[in-house]
Amino acid sequence: MYDVVVYGATGFTGQLTAQYLAEHPQAPAVALAGRNHAKLQKVRDALTGISDERRASIALVVASAEDAASIQALARSAKVVIDTVGPYAKLGGFEVARAVVEAGAGYVDLAGESIYCARLVQELHKRAQATHAVLVPSSGFDVLPFDLAAYFAVQEVKKALGPDADVDHVSCGFDVRASVSGGTLATMASMRTHPELLQYKHPYLLSPVQGTLQPKLFRSRWLPQFAKSGAYSLFAPHNTRVVSRSWGLLEEAHLPNRYGSTFRYLEAIAMPFHALAIIASLVFPIIAWLLVHIPHIDKLFAALAPPGTGASMATMRKGYANLRTMAYGRDGKTQALSVFRVQGDPGYLKTAAFLAETALTLALEKERLSPLARQGGVLTPATIGAEALAARLGQYAGVVIRSAPVPPGTDPATVLVEA
Image (cartoon, rainbow, N blue to C red; front, top):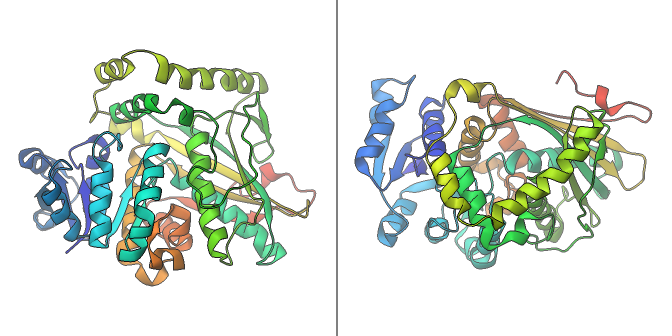
């Protein structure tokens, strides 16, 4: 049995994920899967930095979401399947996930499609619990860093106030340099069938518990952890829904690491100066509107950047993400900060690492999985065993994840700066 199968290994993110797993120090048992054997062979031949023996150990599996028998056989052969073929609602993601559930295995993807994730929750969550399958959608840049950052900031507040303390809210600010691939553009265009989900609405779409957050657009938001103004984030709608699912799952199970009944998640992009934050907050929602209202924009995107294409390795190595997330206790006094920092394009080069380490957490860290993961279901990065996943990201993927209290009177922008 393979530890991890990369389905869609000939695509841009699939190739990056295959390379990451091929070079992994733990040498997990890996298979590359897709519709075309010759293309899979070419991907395997192009893997760098590995021995001939390691290359020969990486299997090739022909499978397609359009062929139920092949996908079912694929799911039965793997501890975890990483599905990199998006847009997921359009290209058979549900069929792959359903096969994994019936096999009682693990499933990881990088879906930024809320409506697709909602279908997984509605149709597969209970069945996955019955088969002890674990599904972790949205494990790429959206939403893994934001979900883990919120989790660890909350836990730092609870250390100070006690396990039964409620956290009022977290405010995530981030600075990022990332590229856009053809697959990302195709996914964004596919959202035109549900344009309301690109808007800052329906924060509890994925949560088993309904909370108190009423999202509102804003001109700018002060981010004390950066000492800068923040702008509206295009990532915020889907990020908020996934982080709220983490909150809802923990709240529903009444686990010691739950966030508290009135928890809310806020997010903004740190901007160099206040005026730019205001401009960006006006422009970004317009971009979202245009994405779903311009006729044939999907064809335009396909012409500009065909799915399967992306930035050069040199460009991706210059990318980075720096998340600084504040958590505020309901006592009005206690504050904590978490940082999530990574060098390398977070949307592609490091998303490959996020996907791989999420999958390897499920495949190799059985004893460190959370009670929710041991039960099964449609979960989130923060609810499968956040500590185990964070440790792997730090050890193997070069991700810095730290958290600390922010003492009264301390400038949050000075905390964990060198972490």
